[in-house]
Image (cartoon, rainbow, N blue to C red):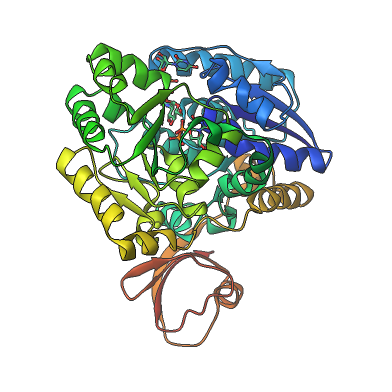
Length: 435
Ligand code: UD1
Ligand code: UDP
């Protein structure tokens, strides 16, 4: 078996690292394709060093450009590499342009795609990431979803539940493994006064930092938050915009605000773990905050990680200055709110997601299911039906007796993922009856 892994940006390197480790541990043949979307040392190479990753076999070197130009260059580069290699499955991770390009190219070449962190939805189509993850999921064969909620997003969109594997998020694998290493090797804490309350801030979302009004609101709230020592490793996109809107000078003159270059993963994890509060618009940080039991404030109006909010570890504040200040001060002044946020249960698993991903890939490969089959092999007819079940019966028994595939289960007005052992008594079932 040969696996191709496509990565392009900082979070993909971090979240694919445990998958690459697991592939190497199992001595499976693989190629690593870097699209080159992130290219600064501190946005890319630093993570290969920190995470002890092999050098990419291919770097397409797309650099920065418009979405269309970047995606087109990635697609042409990835296609060439896939045609040169005999690949059994292409793995993509998350929701960047690399995921869009990798999934589209592979699916058109009839190479199965495994989407790591599939099924997330913000239901906000102004986000380029929402388009990317939806398109990637249309092109994918195996869906490695982090949570039950993301699995349900996919089944209601019509994805076959048999191809959805609830694995947890590989960010937990990365976080748990590397925090132990960071504890021994990182000296980041010597650079800041850890006796003060550290607020670690990151932001880079286009809808925040490219928008002058939103970015100004956020900056004005930071200026007022002098109860904290704010550590702000600034993303290159954000730095450019802070300068463009004349906001950079206002921030650097404040003693409580430390603007630094993006830092490596080991330093960053240790910094996060010692933070009083995390303020961010990053996807990965919302997950890391709840993994590390640090309260999180998210500078967005919606999130594709609603589990963090439901669990109580994350509060959405948008970019409204008053809302940001009010929420930060609530967490600062009210012990019980802060403790509740710290105790939120991590919905992203136990740190074994990459093992589950590789187990599933191996099983599908061994059972000869890693193939996009031509119509003459898969042609079959079915009727899609709905039924209310009054008997005690599990999904697997129902499927066996009725020669059916259960798609979604509805119970008390909620959609449920059709686990094989789920009891269907008293529930509505949407299923395909094979004829
Ligand atoms: C990209 C992803 C976003 C992800 C983020 C992770 C897309 C559409 N966006 O956003 O989903 O959350 O990465 O950080 O794929 N730049 C540099 N050096 C670099 C990289 C970028 O200076 O190494 C600057 C360039 O001016 C570039 C800008 O940052 O124009 C934005 O970079 P880009 O890769 O387009 O998007 P990100 O904001 O990084
Ligand atoms: N990160 C890092 N150093 C930094 C800022 C972030 O190592 O200076 C890590 C962070 O721990 C997380 C990932 O980068 O794992 C998140 O990347 P980013 O916020 O750029 O992307 P997103 O997750 O929003 O797609």
